[in-house]
Image (cartoon, rainbow, N blue to C red; front, top):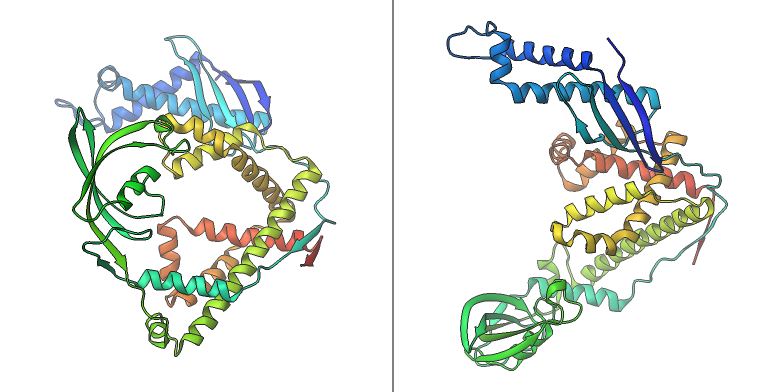
Length: 415
């Protein structure tokens, strides 16, 4: 059987293109194998299973046989390409420029994203500053007030104009030639940015049951670019105003919030939680500073294909519509580049120092998490596996090992 020919046509950090030529004999053999597979499982009137003539199968399942043939040819070509070029792909290749004519070689291009070669000559001897934010009484009070707001019921306020932080129920209709059309109900808390400023300003002037005709303008930084600076004629009706009645800040409130005997005990618990959060944030800043110093010292570059890949993941996670992708990519490119550089550095250290999380470490972490949640480790493992979150836990353990290794080679000063 003639050899499949693979020729590298383009190489850049993080990406390569390969031209593939598959001889006609290989194509014919793959077609025959696909036809035989369909012969064995085809069920057609007048024929016993496995006894349908090849010519009938080829006519009946022409498109399916062609797809199966192409799938086999691509897989075999990819094995040849990986072995010949010693590629380190980070994902399956994309197929472009497919040409397939009867009796001629099948040709196409592989476009593949690669893990770039990275040389990190300096990983240590950096000076870092770790500063833990102070937990003040004001921060504890702010947390307490947030808890009060979460527990506070919304009570109707009849006959009063709304104030900031009130919950309003409104109808907003568009006006065309003085006629209100298609009224839509909305509920939101004033001051949280759910409505544009012009709308909130008009609402604040109304009492429940009142309406007003107005022309409102979308702000210049509005999320939908097409609406920025545009004006709309609307009719606004305020149907109801609700206001929160905050519970008293006393021992009874503390008992409602959990196993706390007094308000002072609740304050102490909040202060402890804020302190732990401040410690975690301080550690995160140190890690980020360390990665940035490694990136700068080694001139780590974020390859464009990997940046585009991360941007695509961001866009999918945030459910960005296709028409807004270009603007989204422009705004988040710097973030994606930083993410790629970070991942390249950490992955390099993982491989060089063999720091990947082990099964034993993963089991131990799940056991610890299960104990905190008051559940069995097996149940948590199954839940994480079903949600495809086990890899996230393993990645967390791996990163902890990497930063323990890296920080041991640098100096961390407490501010």
